Image (cartoon, rainbow, N blue to C red; front, side):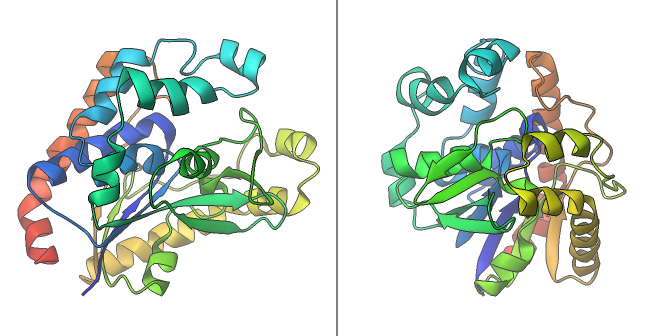
Length: 281
């Protein structure tokens, strides 16, 4: 049995995931590997470093800081989420990320990125969460239209959710056969075609394969969630997701709203805790 943890993105819907992960850590629940997409990666890395409460703490404290996320940051840096603040000052000074605990934890941790040239997902194992790993993590969370393309190792990358929002098939291909999937949308959610495809075709014209992938994203997403819940109903995996739409903006700055969604994640995890323990036993 190889236990896997799969974390969907969704920007500030990730506060739901943060609540789930904190409950799992508080109850000593561990996995052989985890894979995060976008916010699932940037918030999920705290599960490997075993830093309970860090995600909700720094988001509530710095959500209104223009250096963290703002139109001002987008205008002056080219990124809605400020690179220097989010990936340097914050983890190194303001709310220190525990790299040593991260490295000591034997759980493997992966992030998903989208290759702009091929229009396909790439999966990167983040061993040390060092400066290079953080570039890959940043790429995973670099939302199209409001982020610069991230260049590393000959690749040009953007948000992993553009090509593989829920990397269940990838983890199954890696031998993970006892999986817990954390989603940030309710079971009844159906993704619709992006209303901004016209703008993506203009701004991402250099990457036609990525644009093509984005035009089909809603189809792939809905097929994947259908497969996830089918397997969950058959007892082949477990899903934790909100009972209804979280009703939170992707760039929410209100600490009370962040706390509300975080507590909803905690509540769902606590309700399902006996089932989770039994399933992973």
